[in-house]
Length: 398
Image: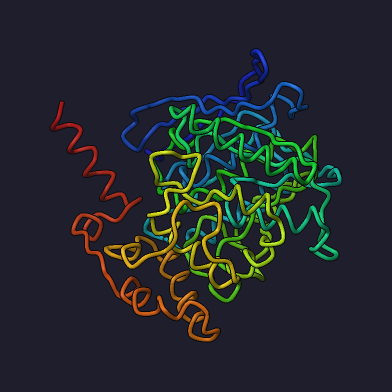
C-alpha cells in the first residue's frame, strides 16, 4: 500500500491579539496505519491573511517530510499552479541531493489557483543573525542596487531556533529584534508555529522550506519574501536547507521567495553591518546557549562570528560578553559541512589578509579535529534506518 499524506485546511480562528491558520494532517503509512496531527501558524491579528482554503503554506511545509516518508500528498484546498510547477522541480533537486532520504511523490490538489498578480514590496525573515541583518540593512538603506526592495516587515518565528516552551527566551529575542528593526522604521511581525515539532526531519535540510511556509501567508502584505543567504556563491555546499537553487522554487505567482545576499561572505556582511551600531549591538547568532535571547560566546557559531568580526576590523564586538582566548578554541567541534566550509573560508581569509594571524594555529586545529559517531555512521540522521531503529527502541520501552 502506498503511503499517503492528506492536508485539510481548517477555518481561521482568532484570539486576543492574534489569529491562527491551521491544517489537519492525516498520514497513512505503507502498513495502512493512520496518524493525524494539526500544524498551525499564529500571526498578529491586524494582518490580512489568505483565504482559509489557500493551502500554499501547508504544502510547502509538508513536502519534504512527505518525501522522507515516501507519501503522496492530497490537498483538500487550493494551491497556486505556479507553485505546483515549481515544487515538481524542487523535488527533483532534493531527490538528486539525497536519493536515499527523499523520494519523488505525487501531489494532488482539489483546486488549482490560476496565476495572480503579486503586490510590491517584501517581507524579510529576521532571526537577528548576521545573514538576516545584512539582508535587512542592505535593502532598508537601498544598497542592493536594482534588486532593492521596500521592506514591509521583518518576521521573527517562535518555534524554530527558540522552542515553543521557551516563552521568556522568545520575549527577549523579540525585544531585541523590535529594537533593531525600529531603527530602520521596519515593523516586527512575530509569528508562532509548531511545524518543527510536527515533523521528525533533519532541521538543516528543512529550515528553508519552514521559513518559506511562514512567509508565504503574508502575500496580502507584500509580494516577496527575503531569506538571507548562508554560504556565499563561492562556498556553496549540498544538501543545504536554504540554497539559491531551491529557495526560489518555493515561490507562487503571488509570492516570490528570494535567496538574498549570496554574493557576500559573512565577513563581508559584517563589514557592512559595522556601519549600523544598533544592528551590531543586537546581533543574535547563537541557538545553543541556555539563554536563547543572547549569544553564549562559547559555541562554534559564536566563536566563528567573532572571527568574522575580526576580519572586518572589529575586535570585541558588543554583542559578545567576552573576547576570544585560547580557551575559546579548545575542544571546539564542527558538526556540519556548512560549519566546516565557513571555518575553511575564514582560515583562507586570515592567511590572505594577515588579520587575525594569531589564531591561525587554533583555527587549523579546529578544522582538522574530527568527530566520529558510530550511531550517525550506521544510522544517518533522516534515514529510514534511523527511523526504524527509533521505532524498535520505542517498542522495546513499551
